[in-house]
Image (cartoon, rainbow, N blue to C red):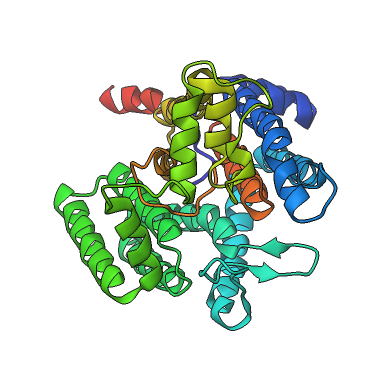
Length: 388
């Protein structure tokens, strides 16, 4: 099933893998990802030294770690994008199984690092967040199940994938991590919609999410505190949202100047969740719009290429990966300008992080693999053949 893919490039017998990859990969999306990582390194040089100073570390400690993790992420992205779709699906399924088991044991062996949510395994030299690696694996597995359900006498893949999403969200809620839960449900909803789901099912799912949110608000102090802070008419200027809002307003169109920003000395998460506040203060709206444009380019180009895809599995998985990549960026940016409650969600390839950077590399590697041009012909060619 996963060999029927789009594109009309002629096969070149004996062509080495690297030239073939370069000829077929979406170079615009690849360039945008590299630029996002470059912007992240630039902002890391501004945001990380104050944190390193507070922790008694070398001024460029976090910058060096970001360069290391980012390099690993880019290597993972390129290697995965070179693989055939069948092999990517198999590896993603194994990765999903390992991440799911790790997620199950988080309440017993995980740590919260004083942030009120048990999301990480501490390894001494670093930490791992299983939910970051779970997302791309879940999307691939769910797309496989949904695509298989469209075959004659196929399994009830849509129901199985929905049940799997609900179970994952239940484990994530135990951390609690409602932001990642929302991404899991969103990715499933996108794939279900692309597969031709009736609108009533999606509306019903939205109602269930609202009900679950009200239950979480009444039973989770962590969740309720963030919602109350978001709904409050006044923003406490000494909170992270207050610092971020002030920095964005101070930056204006062109920023206060490179290295002149002050928010990085006050925001504990200036290098991660609120990195866009550093960008807005020092470089202004110009850099923020540039970052938004890079994310939009990756998502839009991927969706356009996937519209010509013949294989339902690749079409579903690619749409889920592209939309999750975009919506995670939207959530991070929206939190910084107080359009959404705080989620503890990084900006892909821009924020500092180990798990988030490497998982983003894997996610984009799978997406680049699924959007490569291949010689089997586009979906419109198949439709013309049916008409004739």
